[in-house]
Amino acid sequence: MFNPQFQKLGDILIHEGIIDQDKLSHALERQATTKEKLGKLLIRMGMINEADLVKVYALQLGHPAVYEDDLMKVDVAIVNTIPEDFAYENMSIVLAKSETTVVVAMEDPEDLGTVDSIEKLTSLKVEVVVAGETALQNAIEYHYGKIKQTDEVDAALSSIQVFSGDEDDSGLVDLSQESVSDEDAPFVKLVNLILMEAIKERSTDVHVEPQSHVVNIRIRIDGVLQKIMTPPLASLSGITTRIKILSNLDIAERRLPQDGRMSIKMAEREIDVRVSVLPTVHGEKIVMRLLDKGGFNLDLTTLGFKMKDLNTFGRWIRQPYGMVIISGPTGSGKSTTLYASLKEIKSEGTNITTVEDPVEYQMDGISQVQMREKIGLTFGSTLRSILRQDPDILLIGEVRDEETADIAIKFALTGHLVFSTVHANDAPSTITRLIDIGVPPFLVGSSVNLVMAQRLVRTICSNCKEEYIPKPEELKRLGLEGKEHTYYHGKGCVQCRQTGYRGRSGIFEMLEMRQSIRKLVFENANQEVIREKAIEQGMVSLRDAGVAKLIEGVTTFEEVLRSTVEDF
Image (cartoon, rainbow, N blue to C red; front, top):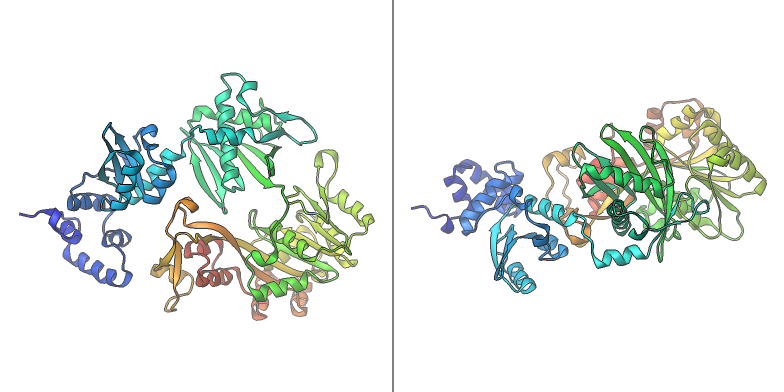
């Protein structure tokens, strides 16, 4: 008689008709190389799914099996029997509780250390059921992600102040529930908690996205959006009204886009929040961009430059005149690089002025001007006035139109060093973008010294970093077939919110405007011709810079493929 509790996992899979002997043999041969657990390897090879593994594992170990649908139905009060950090760290979740026992779903029921820890935490006997890794992770994220009021949150909320609109235009908005009606109080509390969670997790923006039945609340951490909660769609009106009040917008207007701002003051930080409201088919979508107005504490050596690139960049930012342009999409770290450059070269002997919308960092020793288009303080009008201030170095937040570009280039041609940003895909296309805006090619070629495209790739969490065996298609896409390297990824842990990543590092594509490149620009050559000449002269593409970070063990295949395009 076949007793699964005395059999190997592979034999049980064959007995249950899930795989055949040929597939098992193939997997065992692969396992000898990868050293993975057989079950996970079979899933990765597409031979079984997670439900198959849970079923067979339960038969082998003699524990009941539980699947994702049931995991999602557990009472939050029961789940909170064990702390969130412990649940993530040990991939376990409490399903039921009595006076003497607690039922816990685990991926590995034989993990006696975790079982013993739960018994000590709860002073109850543990009954284990088997669940899949993905189902457990989804359930843990779902239950612990629900809004829950705690003394810690109350204390945090009491330490922050929010100013509606511009801080100098209106007074403080009370965040406590005492100043609002009982009907509005839950939405006040909900918005406060969303803001606190975003600030705590180092988020750069918050997205409130109405769907057909729920509202997705996502925050962007290290450049990637992560869902933190899903309140019902009925809460959308209360959430949007509260945010509109805080950002001084028209709460009655729901058909047109609106833009506003608020300022959050905490004990040690001040955060400027830019609010954008956009009508969608399910309701108003809101994006809040968080800008930390604290002192700038980064420098060029911490941004991810290779030593050769750092020396090249350092040489060009110390030239007496000309333009240095950083290009890339929103959120690619352009402003951070520019401010690190100013920090590197500022001195008592230089007059540095910036013109920005918004001012993203505040730095001593330089003059910073915040645009206010409502009162006529635009890039064009400000730049014309700044010329009379005799600046040595000028930072223009973004070249977005012909007027700004024309003034910036004239500054560069008249003995000033100008830093700015342009939204473009890579370094060569930045040149053609300036020409498209309306700047004549001869002025672009004469004034620009360096164009640097950049992206940010997430770095592997140092706490859960482990070796990784890439798939053949990953190696092929990055041109690494047959090359012997050790690769890494993050397994996922509490410190990185189970993502495997913590922090970001820059990858850079530097186009130095040498004489041969300037000649091509004068001739109005297309970007592909400029790219070919630049690579011939030693320019490293964004894709190759990403591959170099991958080989160094800084980032992963997934990040390089996500952040860069293939070089053709």
